[in-house]
Amino acid sequence: MSATVGDVPVGNAYDKEATTNPIERRMVNGFTAGLRSLLPSSPANVLEVGCGEGGQLRKIGDALPGAHLVGIDLPHPDLAERWRGLDSEMVCASALTLPFPDRSFDLVLALEVLEHLDDPEAALAEIARVGRDTVVLSVPWEPWWRAGNLARGRYVRDFGNTPGHLQHWGRRRFLRTVGRHLQVDAVRRPVPWTMVRARVSNHR
Image 1 (cartoon, rainbow, N blue to C red):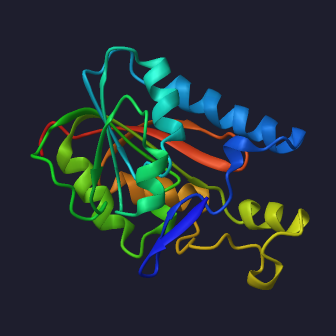
Image 2: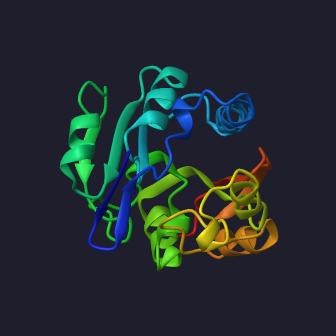
Image 3: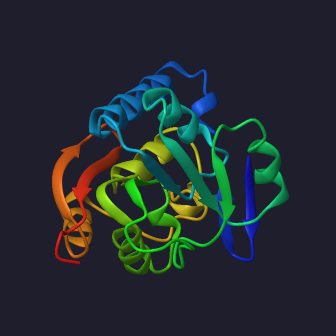
């Protein structure tokens, strides 16, 4: 399911969680394993920025029973329908202006979000502001993400670029970008993603 608000896509351009392709299924399983390996053991309050249809929130809820979950994304009726039944507090908001006080969440996640933003540094600053401990981020690993799309015959006219992807990070540049706002302490490389765990500075 994919939707847009203005020029900004909300939801997934391609629902990889529902794929039955064995190669794609293996990649999605690798993503899930990487995510689980980076989660802290017992955060009380968890925020997912840009939660889309809520697929990752469901996984996080399974992995962290007892945590209070909050998901945000831009307002759209299709997303609201998909949020039904989620055991989470759902909020319509922008990643660039998170409607929460400083240091509100033990864990903040932004999974497959930053590549969609024209100002990802502003979003990282907001994530660092509302977080008080752990942050987990993921982005497509470029140029291999686009190469994989081309190999599967997807988005050929756009040279393999997934609709809505405005940022294209190699791993080193992504780590430098995150490091301007947070303290990176672990990296996972489930192909074709870069996934990091970082800490909010105690001196903010």
